Length: 400
Image (cartoon, rainbow, N blue to C red; front, side, top):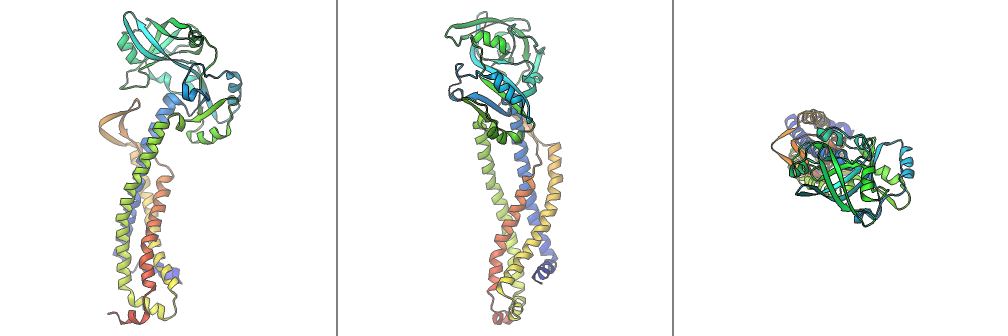
């Protein structure tokens, strides 16, 4: 009975119901669109970091995380490789060696990082092969062939086939120095991630640094959402640790989480505006129906049922608004997934040039706004409902 009355009452004042519904729908769509933009912009940055350099996860020796020393390395790579190959969720993995070097050509010098990679496995984990500007991707090992960043090539005036002298410190304490040959040059990027990098094969890097271990294993999974569970379930063994991209790029991840929390201020402002509209609508409805509430109480309707009826009236409007809002939001978000928002001035973040902000459709774009609308509607309608339940039947019937 109470359910039928609540449903009937929302159509008694169609204009007021329509206005309240539009406010709820607008709030839902604004929050959904904001979430889609946040998920889209950060989703693109996350895919950039993981596909360009970090991979989905990385394995290191425990001490290496703090020291990044060439001495804190992975010695049992064959055993680790065999274990990773048996994991169905692993698409590919690639070993790496990293250390600082001083690059020379004639009278010019440049500080850089020499990175030893597997020519065949690295392109399966990252998009490094797609970033080449000039030259060809190397396929031989132990020949000291290198790929250099555009900035290094520009400063040292390097061309394909040129000799490049590298000097560093070997793992045994000796002076590491050798001649390397330019096989390819990365394409020019504004503050690109390859600006200070020199890539060679692992065999050449191990010979150069006088040690046979590796320092890092980058892993790519079937899907980025699997990283947390994989990091918890996979045991690399020994004194090795496995870290998801959230820990590898901890500074970026923390900034992203802080920004997401900051967006809640905007959502709160939106819902305060919606809440005031709902409160005004419900209060107007109660003032016009004082006599009705008096009659209902006079014939034995309990205050609990009156409260329930008013709350259900507001929730019925919220349900209709959320359904329509979800449909409308889907098409709005879908448009911005495809076309995005063009920035008047492109910006660079971590080597990634951003000229458009694209939305991304995720479950939380629809679920979170729905909870916010339902929760706000319930809280706002609770006061008028309690107020109506306290109406005295005698005083209510005397109202003009």
